[in-house]
Image 1 (tube, rainbow, N blue to C red):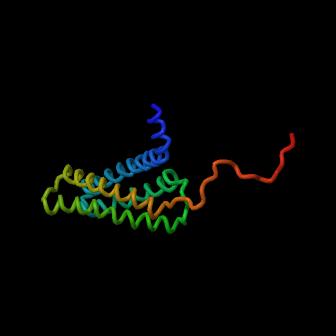
Image 2 (tube, rainbow, N blue to C red):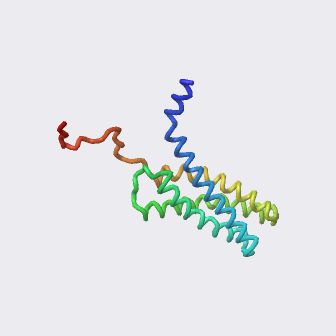
Image 3 (cartoon, rainbow, N blue to C red):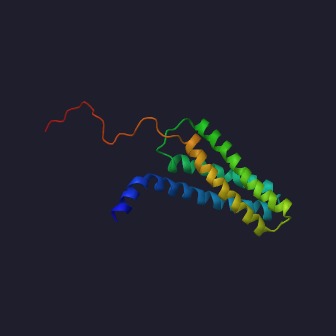
Length: 160
């Protein structure tokens, strides 16, 4: 049990961060999947157009969730900079989804909703690995000043 406790203590912040990232990602995935199917099936947009529309909305949600919850303790380097980088990196991650959906639809000639959803899930999975790594590296940066473990001295004396 002591080993488990030491491992938890060592990796607690990473485990919590991954849990938050996964929670935001799960909700963004539901948004993405729902809008992909809505745009593709109900609105009869093409699969790639549907994917771009769904990703745009789910990415906006994911930015807010990750900035203000998952990575809230990280340094804020400016909303414009973070938002731009976040969407740029999501645009790169979108390529994973576009490639898997495009390959499934136009190379394998599978035009059914199930094939579209399977291709989307694979693309989202690959994109998620890229996004987690890139957000930590370029968007939500580590704090440059260490967070103090105790309150700083105020210089005010308390008389008893």
